[in-house]
Image (cartoon, rainbow, N blue to C red):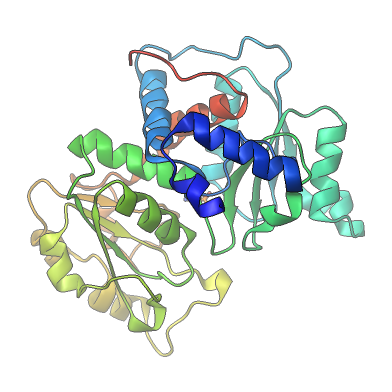
Length: 326
Ligand code: CP
């Protein structure tokens, strides 16, 4: 039934079945965003359209409600996601709580559920959560306020995926038959997982490259030297050492030469092709430092787009309808 709901493009039916399912087992808010699988293709485009509106005609749009309280619960390190959510929240007129697990009652044994339930109980209207545990949100089914997933372990990073989609669509105006290569530490990457699912459903051709040690079952591969000439989008990934990734006896320079985007590979990319990277970037490892801000790079543009997309996701979380005619 869950699979049927996820794939259903009819929004009324989707809400109805979701209501039946949730009514029976839990009360999780239907405006939560936990995984790209929660979103139909129509809903993905709705969010991208709202993000575009925030960039064009709705720059100053704010929540009509006063005291829209949002708590950012980051249990794992973050620069981009954390502070672009914060920027989006302030731009929308929210009041923001910045939670630090190290000075909270988590240090006394408080569970994730109890932390989130506490924020709900003291009046917060939505929470943004990053956590190292895959699918941590399964513990939070009895939370009633919307939860926005800012990254769970190796599982999902839906708002990163949405900003990646926004960046690609902004460039190519379509996903149909767009050739995308995602290269690097595929095994530990929630960005690779979220993009594979969404881009495939949107009609793009997605392949994966990098060390064979980090390949993932069900992820089609292509030799990177071949892929740089085939791709419209070359997306590089960081080696996630904090999740145990590592290649024995390989220096940073050797990694760049063998699997990274160096200047020689760059010279063979298609004229219109772009470089993406979710960042943080390990300069001189997965990408030559001179290429981080080169003409084809959209790495900092992705961060800019992240604020627009997160404004759209927050607007959805608070139940506001899509902007029309954008
Ligand atoms: N791309 C991304 O998630 O970056 P941060 O870890 O800095 O949030």
